[in-house]
Length: 184
Image (tube, rainbow, N blue to C red; front, side, top):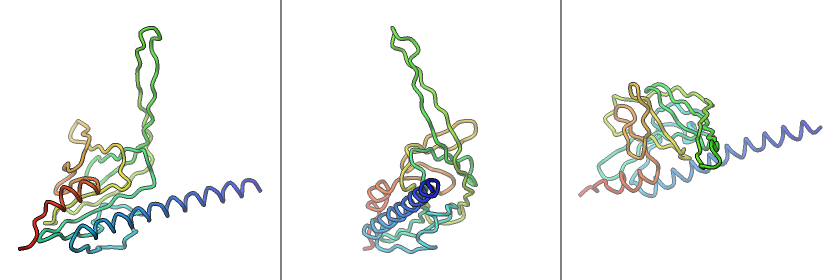
């Protein structure tokens, strides 16, 4: 009987997490509609909450400029999104440990352990003429990509692959949408 109650509680927590992600998606779309002239949905509004594949979710129009947006929504928090190539994105859980090496000197060392949680196959559209932005929502603390033999940490407005840039919603609204010139 206890196992049934525990499994029911865990199932309720999973549904609450999904409901929370859908509410975050609704707030994001509402903010985009308020700041832009027109928002055109290319597929179901909540599809990438459950299945992220890199395809554009919506097109935002402000003035004479249009932007293609993909929104990453995953239930994982405090994780690292890592892009190996334009076809693959992995999500890693990063555990940091700090160790006191010498008590009298007070020197410390840190160690990171990473665990792969999820792997996504993504398909970016590099033939599109529209500038493409990828918005992680909720935003992870770290986004990385492999470039040759080095790993680069990505920030707001950094080039991901081809014509795709990655940024947060606040950066997109304040620096991209607000700098777009209106039609005369």
